[in-house]
Image (cartoon, rainbow, N blue to C red):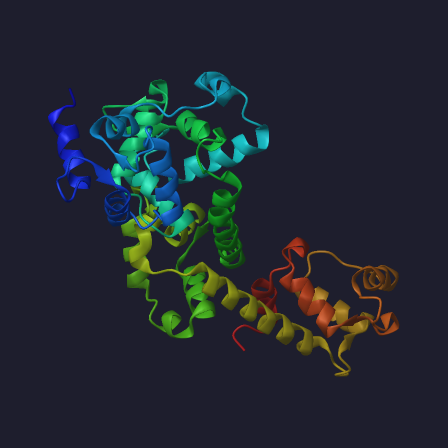
Length: 359
């Protein structure tokens, strides 16, 4: 005999009270619960749950769908073996994604943490009904019933199990593409390389990505941000790299309305502007190329190593595109692009400051 709670749940679906759930009733409730449900997913669910094929769900079929374990491939029923068989690269991605949203670092996702992940990867909220289903279907050894939470191993089980439509490659890229952009942004303005933004570094980022925001970015505002976001034992250091990543990428910080795609694009424009000014400052003959003397003059101001003329021409041979006149030295485009390419590890802001900041 179904419990009272199950009967109440059934009645929520059975809108006309005729004792069965039609396809349209099922669709209406699921789509109201979450906009992740579309016609195809409702159809697949209906076909799986409607065991007698009469086009509606009786209460027995509803109970089996809601509470019975899904029918998975027998080779996957041993959850421990499935998790142990996780390929190394997939395991790394799942672990990093899980840790990123495991806010309290307890190796479990509660509903709020799982919701953060869904918002970040799908742009939609997770509904509690779907979360409770996930907890019920997952192997019990991976669920903390008291916390209503799912362990890291539980998420590995979901990602590896072909019965579910989880895609770690897609989810990982959607989160960590943004994370890498934030890290690039942070590192560019962390001029002292201490892993924290002080006020000046934070202000320079604000000014570079949005000049009007930079003008409003006061020391008082920075102090408030540090007090609001940083743990007590790190407040004196400023904003950490992790903190800045979280503000941009964690849905729980959506009130700050940070947009890394916009700010990263603005960063590239800013880098190009600084690099162009550096090049033009040392292009004494204004021919659009740095000869050895011009390149050496810049290097004396900004470089930590020295080079002779032969070494410079080797550099030109290596860096200058094949269609450029290598005898003239490095072109403006080559120098600017070298500042834009993270692999070259040149910081246009740091070099610009050494040359003529502010201009």
